[in-house]
Length: 318
Ligand code: AVJ
Image 1 (cartoon, protein in one colour):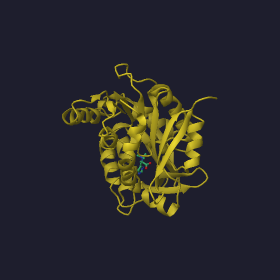
Image 2 (cartoon, helix red, strand yellow):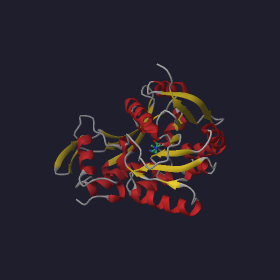
Image 3 (cartoon, helix red, strand yellow):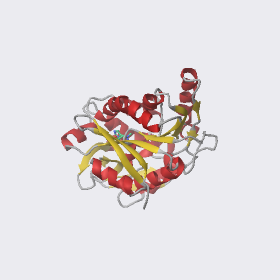
Image 4 (spheres, protein in one colour):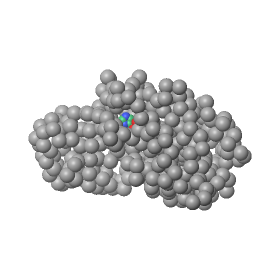
C-alpha cells in the first residue's frame, strides 16, 4: 500500500487503525479517519448546513472577541493553531496585527502548503512555520519560532472529539509546548437541548450520513475492505450521561466483512461507533482545564448560548 503523503499517514496505518477498532467487542473507528479528500469536502458542506450551527456561530463570536484577545496578548506574539486545515478562523486573530508568526499544526500537508502560499501573498511580514503532525503528538514546537509569548488556538470544538481523559492529556501537553507565558483560546460546543443537537449531526439533506458512510468507502479503498455500503445506516444519538453526541454506522443485516485480510462478523443491529462529540457546560469545561494545568480567565458565548470560546492561562500556584 502506498504512503499517503497528503495525510501524513504511513503505509498500512489506515488499515491498522481500522482493525484495532473493529476487533474490539464494541466496534469503533477513530474519527480522524473521516478526513480523506472526500471527507474534507463533505465536512466543508456540513459547516454550511442550516442545522450545523457550530461553525457559523463560532465565526461570529471570533470576529467580536479577536480585538480583546489580541489586546490581552499585550505585545508581539505567536499564534499556534491546533488542527489548522485552513487559515479562515486564524485570520480573525491575525488581522489584529500583534502576531509576528503563525504556526499551523495539521496532518494535511497540501493544505498547509496552500495556506503558507496564500499567507505569503497577503501577509508577507508574517512568519509561517507549519508543523505537519497530528496535534495529539506535538510535545514541543519547532525551535525557529521567535521567542515571544504564544497564543494557542483550538477552534471548532474539535476538542469535543476527545474523551475527557484524552482532552486532559492534550491540554497538559499543549501547556508544555506553549509554555508558561501562553494563553489558549478554545472553541467548545455547549451542552443544550437534544432537539437542537441531534439534527446538527443528522441533517435533512443527508450530508452527515454521507460523511459517516465515507469511512467505509475509504476502508474499501485503503484498507483492503469489502464493506457493502447499502448494509450500513447512519445514526446520531445523544448520550446524556456522557454528555456527547455519538455517531454510529448501524449494520442492517448479519454479514462478514473482510478488512486487511481479516474476516469480521457484524450482527444485524450491531453498530460501529465512529465519533463522539462532547458538549460541555461552561463550568464543566473550566473544571477540565483546571485539572490540566490551566485556568479559565474569560468565557464568551453567543446570545442564544449555542457555542462558547474559553480563554485559558497557565494555572499559577499549587
Ligand atoms: C470537526 C469534530 C468539530 O464534532 O461537530 C461534524 C465533526 N462530525 N458532523 C463535530 C463532525 C459530524 C465536528 N468536529
